[in-house]
Amino acid sequence: MEEKFMKEALKQAKKAASIGETPIGAVIVRDGEIIARGYNKRETKKNALLHAEIIAINKACKKLGGWRLPRCEMYVTLEPCPMCAGAIINSRIENLYFGAYDKKSGCAGSVINLFESGMFNHNVNVTGGITEDKCASILTEFFRELRKKK
Image 1 (cartoon, rainbow, N blue to C red):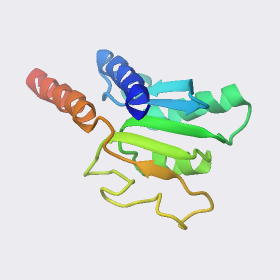
Image 2: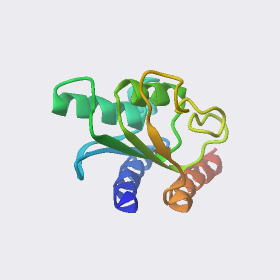
Image 3: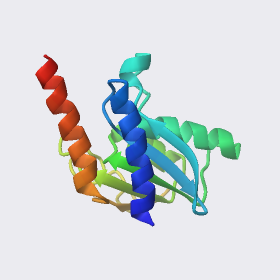
Image 4: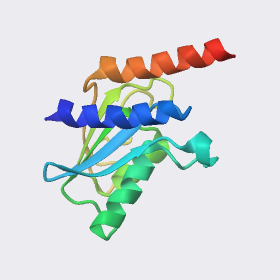
């Protein structure tokens, strides 16, 4: 099941890449159904807040009519940064599944683990490395092509 939804997050990442954004995608699932999707739009919209996770959380909140996202799971292609980790915790997402690890700014264990049990008033179950090779390769290829253009 996790790979099925990560495949959908990868589709979102490809949308980001197609418009020149860092290819990160996210989907939020509730009761086995995707309720929100998001991909990076930082460069396009000139807004530091527009990470894939934040966009997906915003859409899910609108769909469910509140800031809490009970019974929700997030699938994201890259380990969340500090801002996104905080948003995931604050929106009360229950389960987080991510693909590639981010050794420079990942906050689900790579640099720090903001999801460690007991740190905040809400605990998120975290599983990393879901289709890690596919999630990492889309990023590697994107940055390789970007360097070629420069």
